[in-house]
Amino acid sequence: MLTEEQLNKFEEDGYLVIKDFINNEKCEELKTEIDNVIETNNFLDQVKTISVFLADENSAKAADEYFLTSVDKIRPFLESKAKEILEKNDKSVKIFNKIGHALHALNPKFKEVTFDSKVKEIFESIGYKKPIVCQSMYIFKQPFIGGEVQPHQDGSYLYTEPLKVTGIWIALEDCTSHNGCLEFIPGSHKGPLVTRFIRNPNKEEFEAGKHLIYTNGIPKFSYDDSKFIPAEVKKGDAILIDGLVVHRSAPNLSPNSRNIYTFHVYDSDNVDFSKENWMEPNSISFLPLNEN
Ligand SMILES: O=C(O)CCC(=O)C(=O)O
Image 1 (cartoon, rainbow, N blue to C red):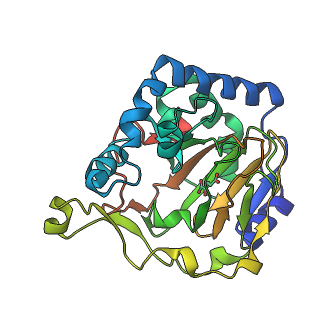
Image 2 (cartoon, protein in one colour):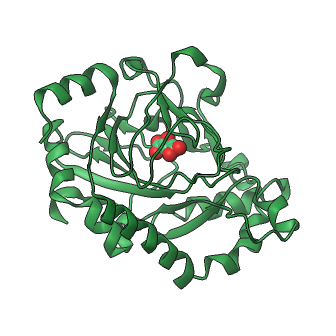
Image 3 (cartoon, helix red, strand yellow):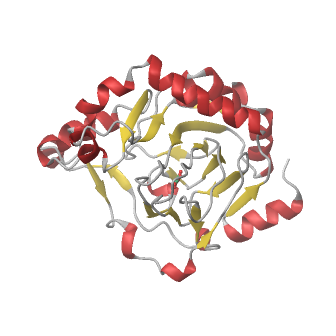
């Protein structure tokens, strides 16, 4: 359970660092497991195919479909620099950006961490009545080429009416300003949701390949740089993230990777998961937290 002090801090800032959420052995276990996932699914053999999606307008449609159908699967996504690295045939550079979006449902080791009693207690503490885990991601932030994550609110991607979505982000390695730790605008969760990322309701445009749109533009340039506070954390620490708090992460130009595992939960009690969301509810990856 979160203490009153922790609850107050979460309420005030919209995010909360929880020290020593998992131990070092568990971090190593998850990192080894992701290597197993890559190997057993032959992800390295698929990179040439997936990389065609990058920086190629003609394949944007296929890229959207690959993304949209990843909801209930374990699928790799590449760093934006992957194409040029592959063209140079440089095998020394790691090019996976993330693996999404159903590790929590389909992989026993990630499932165990996601449905741990500690997680259940946290969601109880913050007042969730019927929490549903709807997605998970393993994010690598590879050395030297790990891309930035633009400022955003998670509610833009996982909208519920009313909005009640929260993420847990677990550091599997030390995360610092050098390797692209998360940065937050404290208190920004008290502001409105600025935009939503939805399936394009315009049928003609959708058919023509413009599958996904922002309802109010990409939030990229709307925030003042000086307001972001880095949340440097140690391996094993977690960060609880309110669905409205604005956060981002810088590129990783350092020699150290920044592996993390994250998943998102919404409260299905008196809340509808928006039908317009890019992500469609399904029985494989939308799992009640307290029944698993
Ligand atoms: O890990 C990162 O750098 C970004 C993750 C993030 O923004 C999220 O999970 O909402």
